[in-house]
Amino acid sequence: MLFRVLPRPFYPSHLRLVSLARFATSVNSGSTGNHAEYCRALVQRHDYESYLSSYFYPRTLQPGYFALKAFFLELAMLPETVSNSMIGKMRFQFWRDAISALGEDIPPRHPIVLALHEASKKSNLQRYHLKRIIDAREDELNNPSYRTVASLTAHAESTYSTLLYLLLSLSNLPDVSGSLSHAASHLGIAQCFTVLLRALPFHASYGRLVIPADIAAKHGLRQEEVYRNLRTHEMVINGLDDAVYEFAIAANDQLLTARSMFEKQEMKIPPEAMPVFLSGIPVSLYLSRLEKVNFDIRHPSLQTKDWRLPWRVWRGYHKQMF
Image (cartoon, rainbow, N blue to C red; front, side):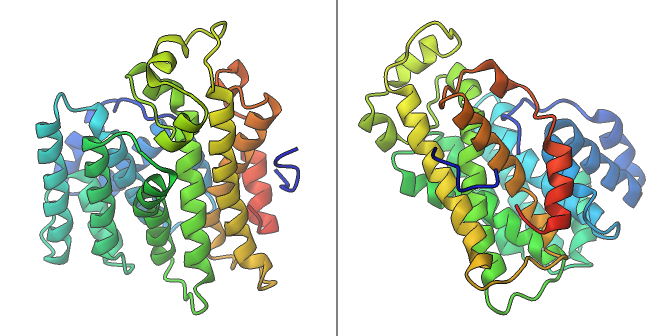
């Protein structure tokens, strides 16, 4: 079997942003607790798996963790909350200006920005990484599909991998050998690929095919056929299972490479860094579930939460493995 070598993946499908107006309104009071609570509530509502991982961060780092995750979520969901690309560009420009203002110590009164400002005073959060995520998400607004695996890999490095770099920076961890950042790079790519696999039905409902075009073309998978028939399990979609299989292999290869960074040097993940790498556990679990249904992306079992996830996250943390 494909993944038998693994001990045996965050992220939910991209969803419309649900209003958190109660928290946003209270932010005007200037209370740090309100900023943190807004971010925490956003992550809890839209990213259950990241919310589980938050418990393994020291309490002093949790506000910064939720700030970074909320920032990432806000940008990921932005295309689904704007009516046209021009408004989307304006929103992305707001975020660029907001991140620039962090360095000038005059952040705009937005709960996520204020939470990021608090975190940046305690940790070395490089604004370059924050802006890199913004730029990549804006590119995605203009070009939601990817022609090649290589172009998608570059996008994944600019989004998911970069978020992991920021989380490592949050903990102020030394990375003399570069193993942590190298592993985070590959894990972020695996996470991105898996998120897209999980969100494939959602994107297909909007006429988007998130499997790279080179994989789709190789297996004769057509976007129009996916859009028409994906919601109907009885309809055969030529090439879908084979394309999903190849895309899953690419995700799994990145996950294995991330793990190998520590195996090659016969070292364990530092306990302070382990919460960052817990994001690999949902990736591994989803790929395992996908394999069990023979890469049938429409199988009903893939649309439910994995009841094993909380226990696997707890075990992964204490055994220092993902």
